[in-house]
Image (cartoon, rainbow, N blue to C red; front, side, top):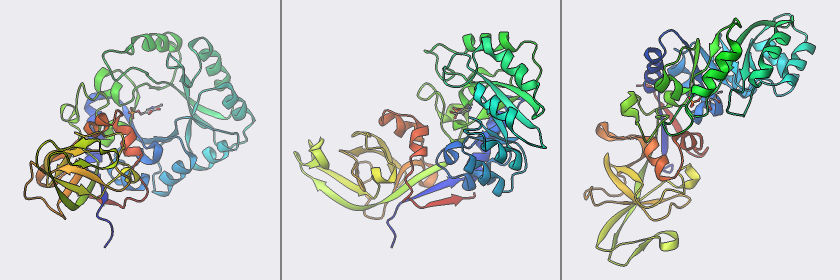
Length: 364
Ligand SMILES: Cc1ncc(COP(=O)(O)O)c(C=O)c1O
């Protein structure tokens, strides 16, 4: 019998979440962002659920090929553009749209031989200081691109650093910089990631829906997936493989970081950090046993984790343990809650699902 752990990818939830971007950005076309192997879900596994998008955005050329192999003939955008000149050959061959964020990429385009002019998204560094041309250099980059026969259409793009919180710098300063530098430039605009789509409702011809499509609230814990009407798209579930009855003073796991102060029945679930469950989750991290919410105890081991069975006295070996996602009888444990207990964000947990975990598609 295989080890009783698996992940499920919920196709209907992917479609549902993506559709939430439509009312939030009513006139916009929606990129389904599927970089990092669809945020750990698997490009081929999410394709059916996300095929209602207007295009797929990603950054790895091999992943772009995989989306084409799925049968997608519509727009595909490389969010970081070409990494070297010969990548442009693949862009021509697979009709990939690509970001242009630096002058070297314009040089490569100028030297590129193609019969099919490219659609590009010219990226502005409006304040995040990661990729893109500074506002002062943006118009001359645009003019250079516009003069190239290799270019068909230029869209205008930027990315926000603080769209997800009320406490940061916000997006106003970046909006001002972007609008001032692009005021009379033609072309479609692409501004918003999930947080900007849900929280700022800006005008943007193309929005880039990433983590919201995967059932994570971009501004958790201020707001959760219930607030945004999102559903979990990945469930990580396992089973209890043992139980133990602790006496006061008994400790659990490596480092004895949890000690019982009263008699306590615990379960041992077949899931550990080698499955992608974060080792940083301390005692008290939420977990479901048979759909009932309880807590983890002690340190996460490579292959096992201990859980408190106080709320589920009938649980025993074989009982279902939901590490995140959907549990039995309509129960739910958002990935954001587990991520928070590990001091991180939902993105990181879903991306880190380990290769040894078998993944199945829940087509319902
Ligand atoms: C340029 C760009 N656009 C969109 C996204 C999607 O962001 P999110 O997953 O927060 O929606 C990302 C992700 O980091 C990105 O780098």
